[in-house]
Image 1 (spheres, one colour):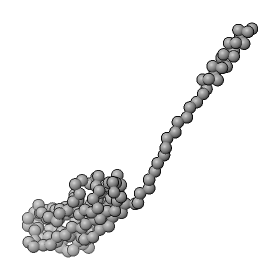
Image 2 (cartoon, rainbow, N blue to C red; image 1 turned 120 degrees about the vertical axis):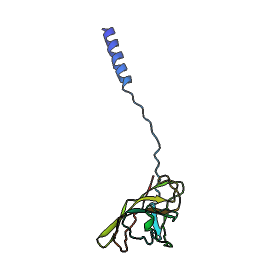
Image 3 (tube, rainbow, N blue to C red; image 1 turned 60 degrees about the vertical axis):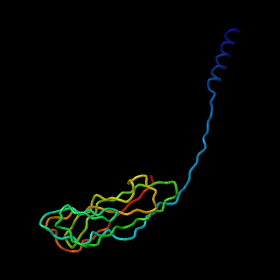
Length: 159
């Protein structure tokens, strides 16, 4: 009987030790930074473009250099400009830039502005406080004459 009591006691003791637990902890940190913001000045202005029987692209780079895939559309001496976007971001943080295509309209007529470029080295990992924007205007064959307008929407977001 003593052996049974001893075995039962050892069994309950072993069960008691196997139910022990341990705890660990880690420090939690968080830093709230100011919201990223962007402002703009200037205009993305392709200047005057001559109507032609053939379609073509007019590319205005972020450094304000213009080129034409259809040289018949070029108007000598036209003035072009590019806008500057200023970004407020805390030191040490980077951002990405995205720019969707734009439809320019003149009454019921339209053209598309695509293939945007910036003066930044890349569209991600940016930390510069400002940059300029250019793009490519798709001009149709015998594009209707008129003044075309639209809005370039530049979005910057923390990475």
